[in-house]
Image (cartoon, rainbow, N blue to C red):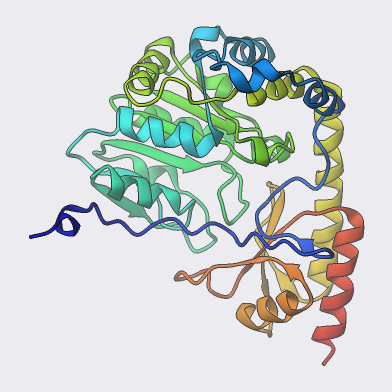
Length: 351
C-alpha cells in the first residue's frame, strides 16, 4: 500500500475554456460583456497597502449589510463566499447529510454531481421532460435535499415562481436550494418565498449580472438558522474566505442600483435580437431567460459549428452529454460581438 491508495478520487468539474488572445470573441462562459459599476473601478484605484497587509473581516460585514439592505432581509440571513461555487459547496457540506438521495436535474450545472461525489452524498439525477423543463411533481418524493438552477443551465429555461414554490412546499423536511445565478436576466426570484419556508436557501452571484466574475463573490439568503449553520461550517473550514478587495468592490457594486438595472436591460435587449437572428439562421432553442441561448441548428451538427467558430477565435460552449450533444450554449456579448458571430454563421451555413 502507498499514499496513492488513500487519495480521494473524483471526476472533477470541467470549466469553460479561458482563451487569452488579442482579438477574440468570448461567448463561452456566460460572463457579462460590460464593465462593473463605475464605483467599483474608483474603489479599486483607492486600494491601500493595508488592504493587502491585514486580514479581512471574517464576517464581511460591510458587504453583508449592503446585500441585506438591497434585498430587505436581516444581515443574519446573508452568507457570502468566494463565488457562488464556494457558497454552494459550503451548503452541500452543511445540509446534505441524509442517507436519502439529493435530487437535481439530469441536465443542469455539472458541479452538483462533483460536490455530491466529493462529499459522499447519495444523489439521483431527475430527468427533465422532453422540452428540457423541470417538472415539480418529479421532486415530490423522499429525498435528502433538492437543488436546481433557475433559470436552468445550460438550457436557459425559467421555472415560474409558483412551480418553484411547489418544489419547496413539497419537501418541508429537506433543504431546497434554488441556484439563481441567472435570475436577474429573467423571472422572479424565490427570495419572496423566504418568509413562508424555513427550508429554502437562495443562492446568487456577482459573476453574471454584476460583471464581477473575476472577483469571485457569491451569496446565499435564507433563514437565520440556516445561515448560522453555514457559518459554523465555514468557521470550521476557513474563517477568512473573502479578501478585503472583494468586500470593498462588492459593496460598491451593490450600491449602484441604476447601473445594475441599465446593464441587465442591455443584455436582455441584445438577447432578444440574438434570438431573432439565430432563428433566421435555422437554429432552434428553448425560450431564453438567462444571459445565454442554448441553440441547436436544424441541419449542421453542433460539434462542427463549435470547431469552425473556434478556428475563427469565436468561442462558444459545446457539451457532450446525452440529449445536449447537438446544442451550443452561446453567451450574450455586446451587439458588435454578436454581429460578428452572425456574420460568420451566415457565411458558413451558406456553404
